[in-house]
Length: 174
Image (cartoon, rainbow, N blue to C red; front, side, top):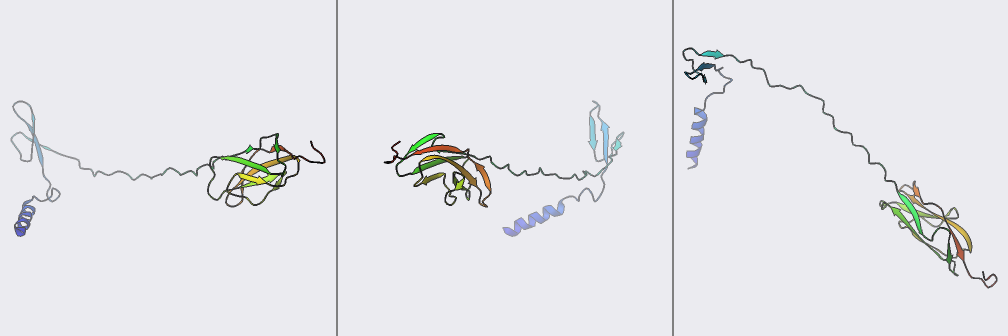
């Protein structure tokens, strides 16, 4: 059965006409009694040979320009201190102050947050915007949060928040 199909394929390929490029064919045009055009590859009485101007179907190459990929603009981070409130009073006899910040949009992996108390860094930068300060003296204090990238470059800062720590004292009760 397999040899039958192989023989059939070879026979079809052998009987196929040679490509048109091997021998140029001529085309003739004539009109019938109703005036309809008739095209043929054999000349008929009164038929005219149609001549074609064969031009290769070529197109000039054009320069391909891909749109430039612009680097995404760095996200504008916003840092703010949520707690304690600006100009607020913290009442804690142990001198503990709990600081909570918010950074939008959420910062990337490797970024760190540093807390400044009265302009001085407190501990090492960390990957959270929540801090606890211990044994802070009573009185007025300024805090600020700084967002740092993985190389330690300053990305954004919060506005300075001023708070007042109230610690009861036996010597000075107010």
